[in-house]
Image (cartoon, rainbow, N blue to C red):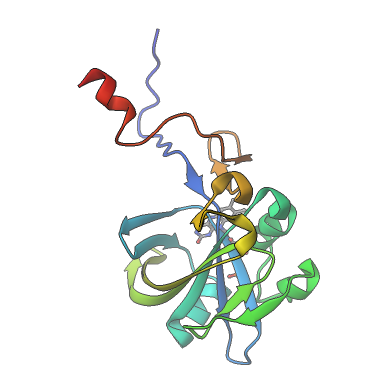
Length: 185
Ligand SMILES: Cc1cc2nc3c(=O)[nH]c(=O)nc-3n(C[C@H](O)[C@H](O)[C@H](O)COP(=O)(O)O)c2cc1C
């Protein structure tokens, strides 16, 4: 038996990205976003309502995108339930921000993989925006590399489970892309 749910949409896995920005005083802010994806080799798209983060994006036109991990679940969720308009989230989380090497936006040392991005387009969309960003640099902590490649088993990124409002960890390898299907070709 199968069941129809109508328009309800589940795309999985949804990433848990942390958008890092500076405000007009150079104060770093972090925001959790799950409605995000990669649309080209160096382009990402994120659906955003209006936040402190979108004010900062309009001001600077540059941002970072980090990926939440098993070790940073509590802080990453906090970045999604508190606004930088009301609190210094970075100080509260005890995180450490340094300026990214290629953009005017913060890299949080606690996140091992960070994309440094420029705003390509902030398209008005309902009450918010569709943000299209272009990656100019990817910055990675060496602790998650194996033979020079990003190793998700070491990184342990989490995904947002929109069906159950949970975070789940990603990592186990179950197949070889572009290869396993050859058994049936
Ligand atoms: C799991 C999760 C996913 C979220 N995804 C998004 C998203 O994709 N787009 C968005 O606009 N807000 C999203 N939010 C809400 C923002 O993170 C939240 O409003 C935050 O307080 C904004 O921070 P800021 O005001 O400091 O920029 C999400 C929150 C959580 C907990």
